[in-house]
Image 1 (cartoon, rainbow, N blue to C red):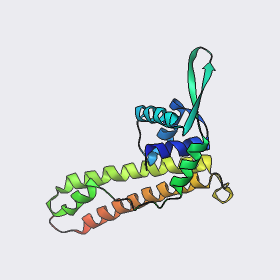
Image 2: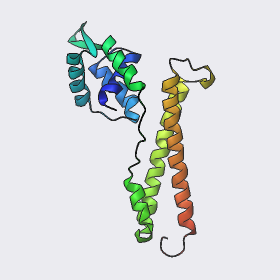
Image 3: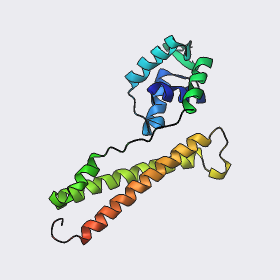
Image 4: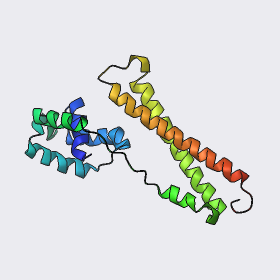
Length: 183
């Protein structure tokens, strides 16, 4: 996936200025696809030149005018093409997992502290996702077809964080049962 596709998805939901897009990335898409504000502005310019988005200059009182971007027919066609192509399996890349392979060489206190930090991160992210679910999808059974994709992505994030939390608990439980090498 290219950043262009993430921007097209966001603009297909609602037109936005570059600043608004960057804030949306920070609040939602950024949980799954990282992009700096500078990258977003650069790609928007390239996409406008390529005809996938168009902008309109909007006057603001007491502030500089802003460009509001909207997806074009060409952008929707590209988004439809991309959504229709199979997604390759995403490789898991985890420095923590590699370190865990060397468990027998680990300093027990350092390892426990690392697992504890990860556990806190998973707990906080899961709470953030749950708050979003309650705010945007208070009744999961009543999610509209237009909102279903966003809801399913949120659920995927929640399940991934829960799995990470469960894994941390399993690691800590196993460390409690290991004799000698890691204590």
